[in-house]
Image (cartoon, rainbow, N blue to C red; front, side, top):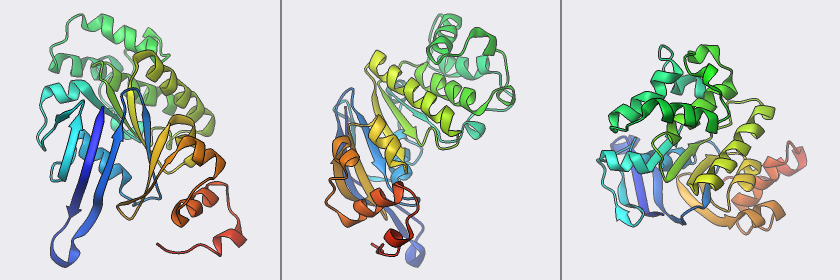
Length: 257
């Protein structure tokens, strides 16, 4: 469903040039959930922004459902690929009701039966019609992220890009949103690409993942390997150790890569 080949992107010029993503390649099957994991600054969100079209000066090949996409995307691309942002407090317009937020993409893409679609997608993310005419400040963080998920779903896409969708939420709410995302993927047969620094989230949500460091891919591993700790690269082993919590003896042995 998604084929990324030799993806590169740089920021800045001359001595200040930063090669943020270096020859990243991976494939995601239809209906699969694929993870990009790594520490902050590893380039994983930049990869997601290249796929989504938010960044347009990348080099390489991006294919969606076998069709190459260019730096400039058309409306059909956004019908197929949608992005859920990390921060629900920033991704929703503060002066737009939930109803207006959900209707806007439908109007842009000339959908009919708009009111029915809004009510349906709100039920799908476990929000009733009573939330429809509220503003974002009247919702909790978890409810706002459900609205963000609903906005991504309302165009009936086939690929959902998830940029740390639960990192800004309380732990108890994180579990609810992750379970909701799992249920929706199964019901709609969606393809997910999820970015996270949390190995526990990736092992729960994804069948396979790519480990990134300093813009490059370090290792490709399965969720089974991640859960068992059966890893081959030292960087991935350190990331796995760090995910278990603070251990001074272990951290003293960490190396820079």
